[in-house]
Image 1 (cartoon, rainbow, N blue to C red):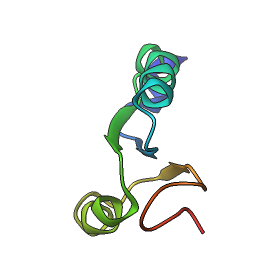
Image 2 (image 1 turned 180 degrees about the vertical axis):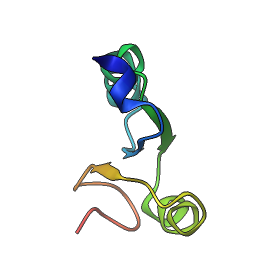
Image 3 (image 1 turned 135 degrees about the vertical axis):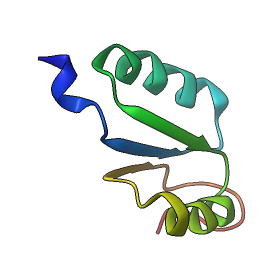
Image 4 (image 1 turned 45 degrees about the vertical axis):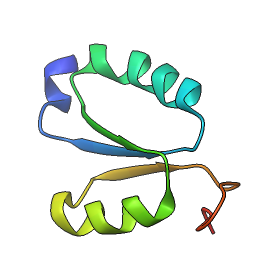
Length: 67
């Protein structure tokens, strides 16, 4: 069933690299394409390029937060 996820892109935005690593470990075996960034500013720039299907966003980040 995991092959059904091929082609779906998930963008992870979190200032904590440990959280990003944990989410990658869960998502990689499911064959999602994962992009990860550590700032909201970077995420806004990348979203226009990759148009992710889902964004997993940390709310409390320095600079531009998840709200």
